Image 1 (cartoon, rainbow, N blue to C red):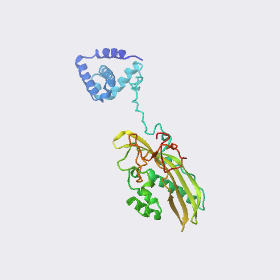
Image 2: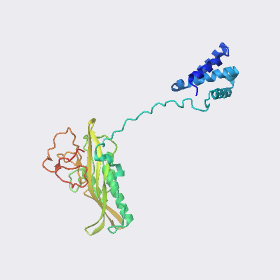
Image 3: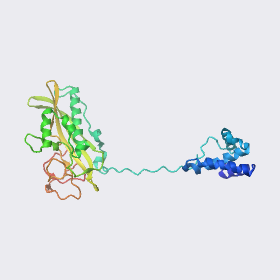
Length: 339
């Protein structure tokens, strides 16, 4: 294929055949055409425009100004003479500009077991329903679905995590549990009221902000038969870790992963022709790293720069915050590994 020098020589030979006045007029047209191109394409297009105009002038004088279709025909003939495919992209064969390299996305969960956990509800893996405890397969499926909705409402609701009212969870409760639960939210510690805020993962007001909208989830669900007070049905046992990336408000240098362990049970039985769902021991696994010397049912994160926890016991075995098997304890223990 000829280089640009060959084309330039042909250009000069062709332009020499016309008068200077006509040449100036046609070159002005060429410059005007070039000026209309997008700025980033001008350098690429200019040489091709010059070749086409010179050939048109030599072949047909001013006629080509009014017959643009002829211009393309002449241009194709000249390019073919040089052994160039007229339909080819003029830029073909040139080194393409390297595509911009996107910076690697760093996750706040990198370097921890949570890195491999599923995101959000995808981590709530439920067992296949089967007939058990006198309930049909369809009824057990409803029990499993209810347990999954309870988990999402208590640990994957962003507003609840930041201290909001757990409205979705309230709607999922049995009417006989709903009243004392709401009472416990409004008036903690009142008689016949639940310690409601402890049922959900809620950060203490002004103690933290989310460093990521992604929540990591890992755990398991088991089915068993329950018999209690003359009732018989299925018990859905949940055991899940929920991992959140948090930091002090406005302090990205305090980025911390918070692990909340929900160990809980949901009893389901048939009564008066309908299913009843009864929540037991919900969210019983604790949170880490969190303060133990503040007991208001909220999670008070413990940051690297936090003052010492007055209830921390350093003489016992350390606790692995990512273990599903460790039994919950009322004692505040040192963590086996950083969260």
